[in-house]
Amino acid sequence: MPLPAAKLALKAVPGANLLDESFDTALKGTFALAALGGTFFLVRHLFREVRDSGADKKALQQGNASYYATLIGTTLYTDSWYGNLIHASREDLYRIFREMPAEKFPDVQQAFKSRYNKSLVDELEDKLQPDEFRKILSIVHYNG
Image 1: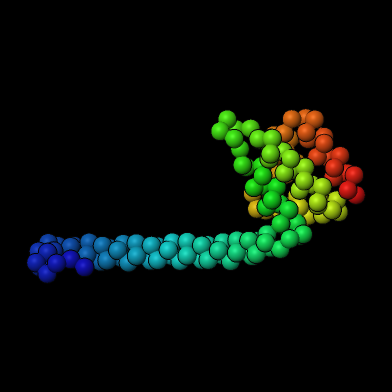
Image 2 (image 1 turned 60 degrees about the vertical axis):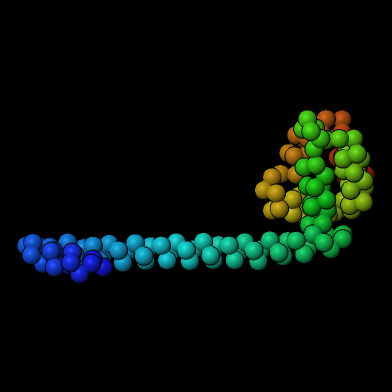
């Protein structure tokens, strides 16, 4: 709302009342838009918080798909300083896939996709050498 002195000056100018009303309308619209935007971001934050806390609880339960997806993701994204998997990480991957029942593999792929927004098979192909990737696939196939 304009200051009282400015309001008096606006009254002296013909048509200034229209400017005053349009300014008030624009100001109200701006506040309404800001409130709507803030509400959207608040609801989005709360939704993501609830969704992520549920996934984190599942990741702590040993033996379910989210647990294996988290282990695999943590191992894949623990790189050495030059960007490749270190030998211990490869051995951890082999151990994880040996422990995982083969019938859980499709569920693990889905859990990995929802957690990291990437394909498990594509990430394995990207991070591993071809013979290491074939070894992982043979482990999964052998467990079944």
